[in-house]
Amino acid sequence: MDHVVYLDYKAKELDNLRKGIKSIITRGAMGRKYPYGKVGIGDRLFFIENKGDGLIKASAIVSDVFNSDQLTKEDSLKLVETNQDKLHLDKGLLKRFGGKRYLVLISIKDFCETENFKIDRSAFGNMDDWLPVGDIENVKI
Image (cartoon, rainbow, N blue to C red; front, side, top):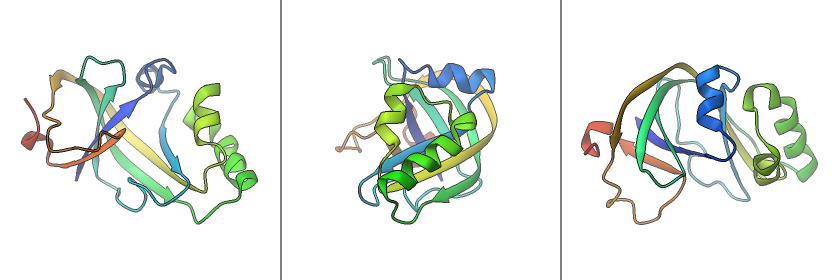
């Protein structure tokens, strides 16, 4: 399964992946929201920054996935802080994900930059920061 993952431009998430100082992607919500339970080892992630250019710039393979049980605010913050060396979240993202009831921690391997390309997002009415695309070739423009 292929996924398009939006990365925070201001937090320099893509740059941190490039440099190898970030190796875990996280998402969190108060409920079990996508990608909770929907990402598996071996899935491909394609990265796009949330700066409006709409370009896929890199990819990676999922090497491990952790879907939390329901967490207290304290346990959620502790989980994020414990993994901060691999998450490398800035203050804004720490605030965004810390304290959520459900967290997904997705470890990646084989990060590589790709030739930039755009995707057709018309099939995704609910514009979220994580798009399950099935096969990237089906949405590539």
